[in-house]
Image 1 (cartoon, rainbow, N blue to C red):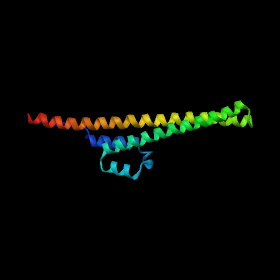
Image 2 (cartoon, rainbow, N blue to C red):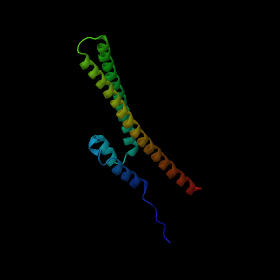
Image 3 (cartoon, rainbow, N blue to C red):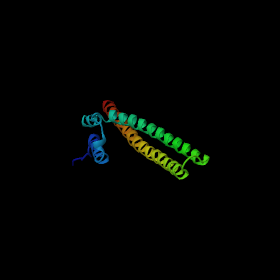
Image 4 (cartoon, rainbow, N blue to C red):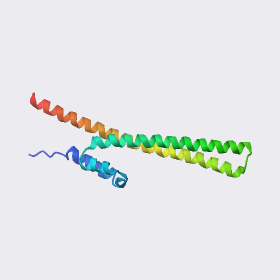
Length: 139
């Protein structure tokens, strides 16, 4: 009677990265590709969390920029200075662009943050399980 064990955790993680990032791997930096190639998944996850945090704050800054621009054009529209149709159109387009940027940056931030945090938790649990199994065998 033989016991078949499932694929090891490294194989599962590699399959996860192949499935999740097959179409977006061209967007990874060389450093990210090297980390994945060398199997440094925890370092990769921490690096991606830092990058996505910066991108999110950049998205929030662009949101504020578009909103302030939209508000300024709206105030010009309400004051009646210049072409009213142009100012109202630019104001509405700035509001739409700002909300769109905030939506997509938030969506990207939370999707990457949740997957990378899950990966870090899995890697930490794998290390603790490996440590526990050795301790159990010794006793």
